[in-house]
Amino acid sequence: MSREIELLTEIRDLLQVMAEPLLAKREEKLRAALREVVGSGKYKQGAVVLMDGTRTQAAIAREAGINQGYLSRLIKALSAKGLIGSDKREPRLLVKVPPMFFNGDDDDD
Image (cartoon, rainbow, N blue to C red; front, side, top):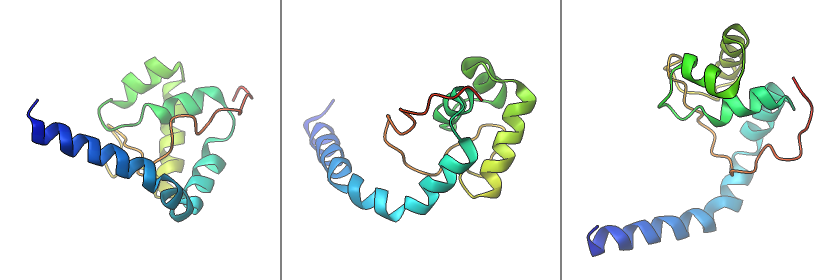
């Protein structure tokens, strides 16, 4: 990796850490909607975490251990709230959330 790319990567990482509180405040409503739709079910939470635009619905269902029909309904609900991109075949969450966003939610949905 060139020195310039390393420097830009380091700057990006620092900016992300500094911006997280501001992003959280700006996206508070979106994050609340995400919690409302996903709830405390570990399977739904696991599926949402995998929605990065690189996996198909089938792959997400398989990796998260969630029923395909249940996942389809979850994606429809997320889409209705504007929380995922337009490609529902390979859904991508539009809300930035920290890695531990769903920790502490223990119910089995």
